[in-house]
View 1 (spheres, rainbow, N blue to C red):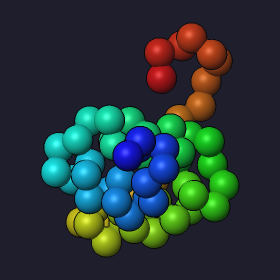
View 2: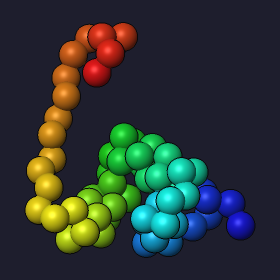
View 3: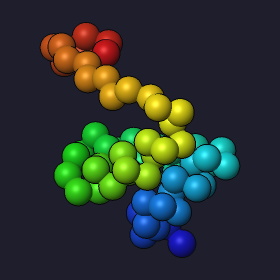
View 4: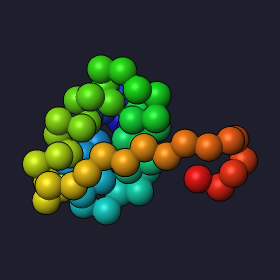
Length: 64
């Protein structure tokens, strides 16, 4: 099954197990924003140890 077809809960579990493809897919979904990004935040936050959300801004190509 393609990673694109998996629900975010499954992607998160795969990423926690070391699957770099699943992690990349999660990051792409977060970058896109929307409902899936909010769902990922809801799922990931309890496992983060109380992490913070950080936003980075700057001109394209600035190496953020």
